[in-house]
Length: 344
View (cartoon, rainbow, N blue to C red):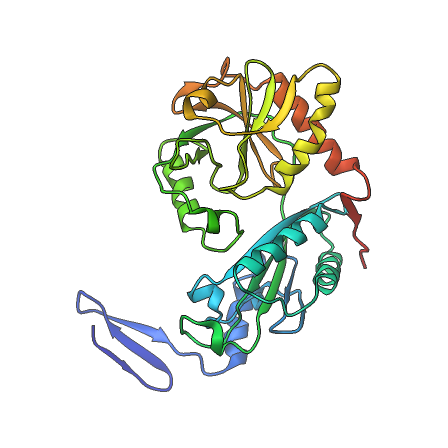
């Protein structure tokens, strides 16, 4: 491929011998104007972002960027987490933030701020966004510095966060899933919420290619693991709620909360027991009910797996009872779970 450039433009000959003229931005103001034009007249789903590189909150989506030499970008050296914004409250912010810092420790990333400051930034960001319903997503990166493998040349780690204005509602329709053929992550990386999500992306695409919503990973011992970015739970024919052990998969905050809330159904006599344990594929497919569990769902019924119905192939009564428990916790739970956002 032949190239030539001057102060105004770069001309590249493509494979067909035709020239494609690449514009060269002559100033930062010209570039900013171009970026802002892309958002003119369009909805802005990202009302606010925080960047420790910039040192503040950004309200202009055209400026919601991170440096190309950030090691999270070109080496995948970063971790992340998510909290839900619902009716002006942040749901389970603290438990997600605790897990966030555990992931950072495993990834050998030292936060540029103490946990209390990170929390304050996230609360102030949500307040500045004026978003009442959506998600709050945040990242810790080894930081910008160079394009080498080691982060030794990065002056400081970086913290980024963004509020996404999106619908958060209770899922009541069942979905179809498949068993994934994409290799799952090793326990070290599966138990750490890091940005290396290529296996997860491929597992999701694999399912979509087959007309399914998502997939189920099975570990090397033949036991049920998790979905691409969610936990999975089962109700056996004996009315036991069973979630896979968390030793090889991510300990989902919503899954852990479900384990705390579900005993209410045992007290009511609707469930026999609640536990974690190993399930083979055969045992899991014999379940009466099945569901995904995750922060943004919070619970999604599964009615078909590998083209075979789960139970009677309909959304189960106990599945929705568990969903109601989680949803009630999200909209009217205790102060330990819900933090009111001090909007400006």
